[in-house]
Length: 195
Image (cartoon, rainbow, N blue to C red; front, side, top):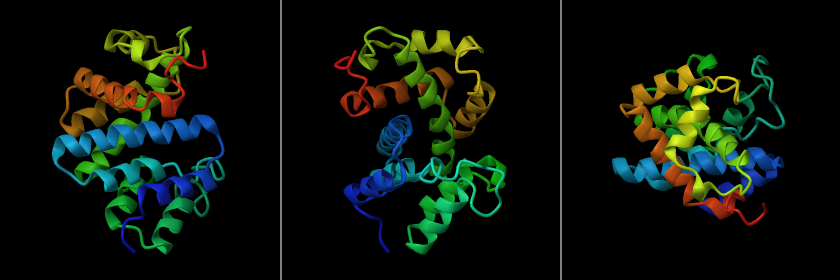
């Protein structure tokens, strides 16, 4: 099977993910990966699809320790059954470091580098009264980055490592992802309209 269209991928996401926060997360990762694909001269649709489906099964199968049906194993089975491009399947597997699948391609590395930082950026927006990502600057995200109690579950050391493996400067990367997310502010509900 060739790569599904963006609408087909989004419909699949909506079938599997009901949680609004998780939908915002995958949309954020999609935006960041599409931006990196443009920067690197890669296939924007392929990279965007990987961003959308990387957590496809997380809501239904969040147990990462389940060796059969845990995240992302169920999604990987589905993508393989549907004959998705090997690059997407490998990137989804590689983003879950606990599976031991090495991040070898630029897509693999970009997915790892973009995954968790989007959560820190969204959380930074949520503490603003306006809930407008357009008002968030790099300095705001960096301030929250330094406060290890803020979104304590987000491993800053892993993010920094993954960004270095991608070959990007950390501050430049955070700004790059923030800018990509600002470009889809309305889709994320972070344009200040619902505040």
